[in-house]
Length: 240
Image 1 (cartoon, rainbow, N blue to C red):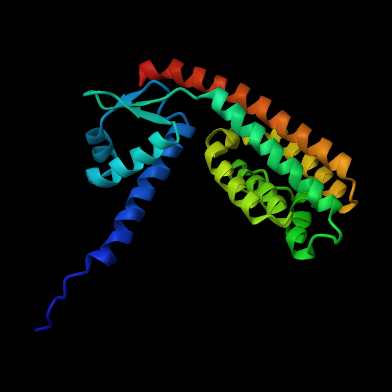
Image 2: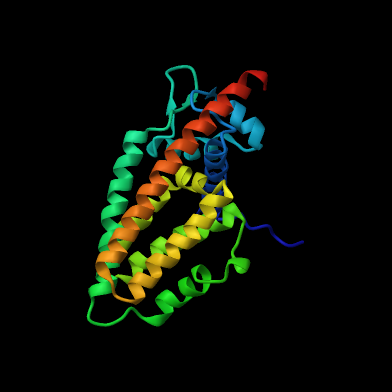
């Protein structure tokens, strides 16, 4: 009869981390989709029951969300979803503006044109005919992130790209709301195309201006949509 060899703890750890990450992603989606409304209170036990997991991955996930300013622990009364901190998001958008405008200027002013592979995928996607554009808000949100991160990476500063990636992770929860309406998807395609053309033509001032306008418009739209979504979620919450 074959002997069962106990699994080493070192091999079990990744599975636990993976489960905690799944719980984290699910809770973050619940907050982003307003299934968990700002001000909602809940317990770890309730989450364990709803998600059918043990308390350890739930606690690990909540700790990450707490560090991101999305939830807070209440003394002897569980947890609470925090209201969106628009002052913090405005500061993050200010940082985004600095990083991305610096990137496009570097792309326009460097001695050699950026490597073709760095921009070819972006050209194929964002300069495509209107009939070939995606209308899937989730997909466009992912592509939008990739567009901006690809430009920063192509600028050639690895530390700037690292900071920008971390920033992207932190603003994703509200930035994705910018693609709930088709007109915002269309505007994103048009604005990305203009930015790309300015970079390819090495028009630094125009690329800088277009990127600034693009980020500022998105910031305003996201704030309006977020406030509306919170209001609507709070209206239906008592009936749930």
